[in-house]
Image 1: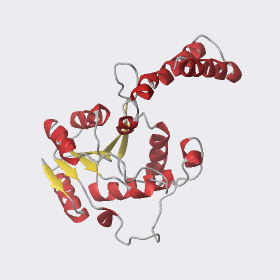
Image 2 (image 1 turned 90 degrees about the horizontal axis):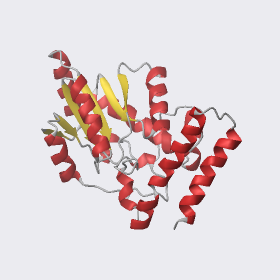
Image 3 (image 1 turned 45 degrees about the vertical axis):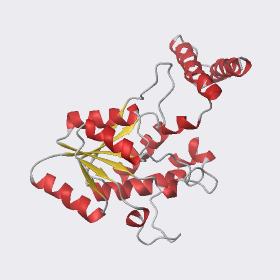
Length: 240
């Protein structure tokens, strides 16, 4: 497995693959890898001739009071996991490599409307940072396909729209959510959970399952579905 740290070298490597008729699959990550990330790699291995995984903690998607400095960084461990899956390249650029002009005078990629709601409303500027860095990563890696998890569904929808509207010549492939045995969606930030919070967290998934089942059984009232969800979540809180 090869580690590449510059955009120029990464582009040269990918162009050689294309010249040899080999497709390139790309898995963008911020490291601290778990089985969900590895599922993306496995999906890429099935469909593409060569696989690149990036490890880059992107500063522009973190707000001023968020966890950029504390975000888990486990590069050596991540590389060992990727090597086991026979990944061809780990792309691990520096911040200066990805943002060569530095400072606040940057060129942004912003997908209108989709990033204003839900997670975007709680984290202003987050998705602008995501779409900007993903565009940069696509331009560096030059993939035929890029793989994203359905866990971050709003992000997936935004990136799909971005790729379509900017006429990007690649396929965005969605991979199902990876979950722990108790149903909790795998996430690098799960490492932040206390023992008691980790025990409670799967209750959110169980609550959503109950809402889903009620919908399948014919319930169409938003008010009624929200009441089911609220009741389930209150039961989690009351059980503490």
